[in-house]
Image (cartoon, rainbow, N blue to C red; front, side):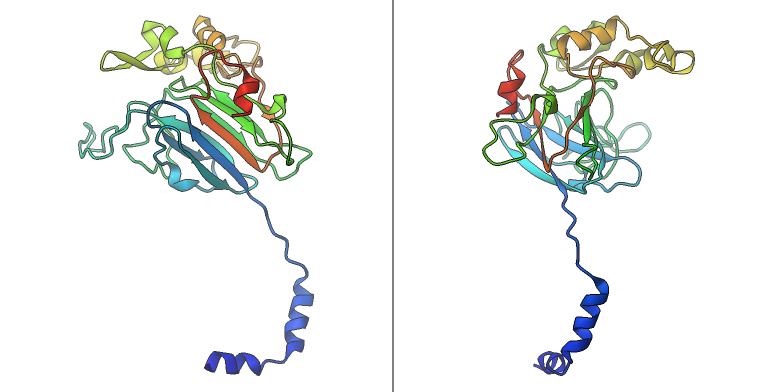
Length: 277
């Protein structure tokens, strides 16, 4: 009651003057990532921001089969998403450095459920995002196998207007035509319980300048890919297979909702069907 009495004694003129001086308040609209798991097993999606950008959704969460989660982001967010597999966060084991042992078979981030901005351990399929508020510029995104592969993922925009049939084809990055783990060369394989759970890139496996496009091989003219990157290219034509891979251009589309789907379809299913899922 005392608060009401104080407010009732305030003259409206100063309040109107304050509103006039401040001017209209602009509402900043953010972006939503709808993360979907169509795999027949749990996936632990994770996100890591680039420098100067906030951590989204704590950096990681569990997504059971057939479920989805909406993740909010500022309209100019930059960073990456990836999926982790085979995780067990109940162990208290440590590695030889005394740090928490890996909790996930692939994409682990220091043994934590919420990565809190920490990047995942390769190999892992990465969705790289660069958002822009300016609709004329469009936001860009790609799916990269530069650090290797662990899961297929598709990315597309939600139809921008009610009644639209599907996302614009140029805004769709479809999944893979083949299971990369099934065609992964033995020297790139990551195995667990006698099964291939991920496929390293040649850079991650061998670390040479030629495979990593560094040093004398650090330009588009001197880094042309390899037989290993062509395995990725053949299985996932829409993904970036090595650092200077120009055959897989990033999508550049403005939207308020982007859909990221792990295991989007059976191998070889068409992108148009994926976009309407």
